[in-house]
Length: 244
Image (cartoon, rainbow, N blue to C red; front, side, top):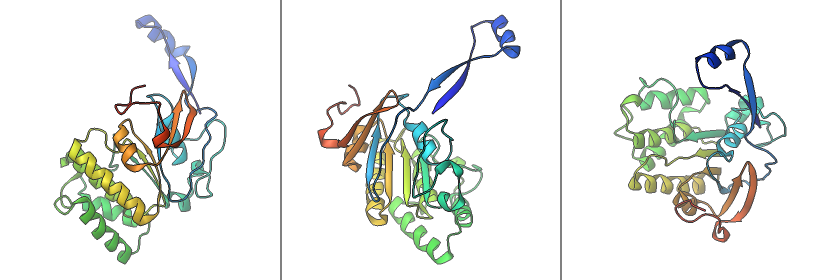
């Protein structure tokens, strides 16, 4: 995956010149990246900032179209964004756990997901009851999304994402900005959800505690290439604070 980014010198003259004669440089975000995930695996996807983790997540979830290469998830080409594919996967980003209008209540957002993903009413009610209990959401259902704290948004965002039971879950920094208690609760929920649902989970996080608690297997990338793929216990590249 290669991006074309505009560049210019500092100053007003350079800014004006760039209006009619814009220059670009090419940024290689992901290159020669190859891995396979098995059904039901929970895999940590780690590496330094700028390594290509989020770009890879966006490609696999169909948000980005790669400039070269191929990928298949559940037998589908992600960037074709076929309805049947999108109904089976989910991308949860810690920086933006809930999309859509912030004026909606959490319950409104959940019902919208039910309609969008065509979840039958009995299945929706059963899934909702389970998620409300596991994520302690009963007091949040009637509140507007805009009024939620970051931790509350993350819990509500997970429920909104999981109410249609995706088979593949991409988690991009799910505990970012959360306190220790909220992070631990979220990790417990993800672990329990993976066991109960049999979903395949690809998790990226700079917090090694997340990876250690959830993943037996880790894929480490650096400079957009895989540097390690194996057991977490055998990984001796980062210390527990994420430093090399």
